[in-house]
Image 1 (spheres, rainbow, N blue to C red):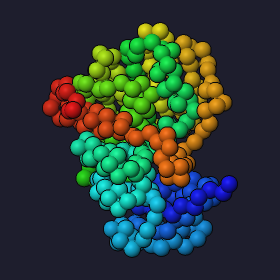
Image 2 (cartoon, helix red, strand yellow):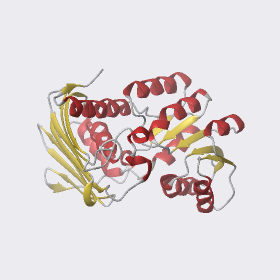
Image 3 (tube, rainbow, N blue to C red):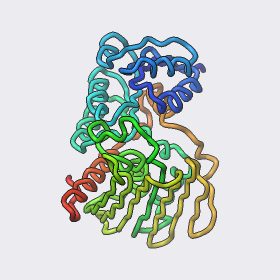
Image 4 (cartoon, one colour):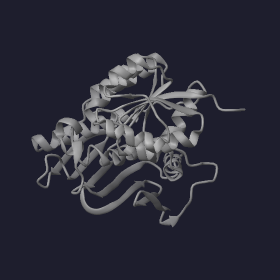
Length: 327
């Protein structure tokens, strides 16, 4: 049976939209891009070159929403724009796939989740790890009790942020630096895999002469009294990432390097996810949920916890002491 054809609009035509989302749209084979909005026209032209065809262009995303109809919208824009754009799309009756982080403020995340639920529309955050078999399997191992009660988590991510430019280094547009951006993947995968609820947070950040944080260290006490450490290092040479989960019955280590899973250890023994868990992507899941009427749709409630933990980490660094995560 052929796939139901879908129409989508794109907000933002930067490198992430061009290099990640456009190829996934093309791979689906039954999704048409009916509009792209970006204030910089050459960005949109570069996206059309990548897509291989002309697409209606809008310099203003609100104009695109007024003049175009679609089943869903993909958003990859500066973080400060996420909330008004996602809110307008959901209110306009469209499903939303949005880049991380969902929003900058927890109150915004709470409102979007409620709006998505009330309207019966999908709200998907593009955390790729949640569709990678190793992370899906890790979550299964935690939830089926293989590790026992979670007692501790150690997670870190490194990347070279010193050579980047653009809006990510502008706190008014980004809301934060390495921890808000790349670090959001680390926070999200930690909370999504473990299901832990952050309670108290202590954060310390170093801007290394930039306007936003480049390096950061965060200690978290969770609701079950487990302790976690989350480290983001932005003046490293390249990407490296680990998630270590220690429980009353066992331990699990996930290692990524240069954006690929390199190893997974269960009680220090190599393990592979079962073949029944197939690799996917947020885009593929997004299109499937739209087509099947949101059957087995998983609302991104963890994104609210990500926002709450992140906000608490920056607040703790500002006041110089541990703070309670705001409910």
